[in-house]
Image (tube, rainbow, N blue to C red; front, side):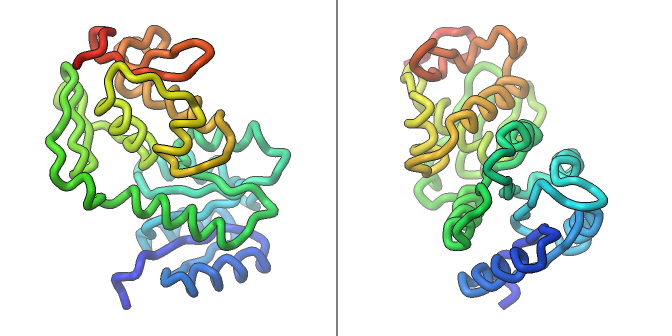
Length: 236
């Protein structure tokens, strides 16, 4: 079936590629594999995958650079594979626009669930089909269409950035902790809370007039985040 989602698996370890490919195939996905960063970029152009599973430690061209180059021209969801001790690289990958990550050694079943999660969120969700676009000053968010614009210019948001913005803008004035956002936006009941911090920072860079003095997404110190709106005051 050609309508099955295509997953590009990028890892220089043949065993990892084979195991991940087998599990994804059993879950109903088509799978393309690449063993280095340059071939990964070529495959994205030639095959246009629906999601990329990207190891950070790659020969010839590292995973972080692959992520950086992909984000210049593509919004394809990216799930990173990182080692336990690579927290700085993981945070940097999220800052560069990766949507999710799985830490090695990992359960192939968990990876399949993460792939399903980013794919589900990158498409139109039936539950959101009846929602009207939400406007906050010159910021407009079309939730069913998964589009956002600022001053008439469409914003280049990753899957998770859009999810976070759509969640917060519909709940002005409400404070959410990082664990709550992980659960309600990412669908995780555990995980690295720095993921939320990184995505809030990236989102502010795209929707705030001055990201260092945000008015839309406020930090509630010691608690979490609150959407206040363009003028810094929550609307009803």
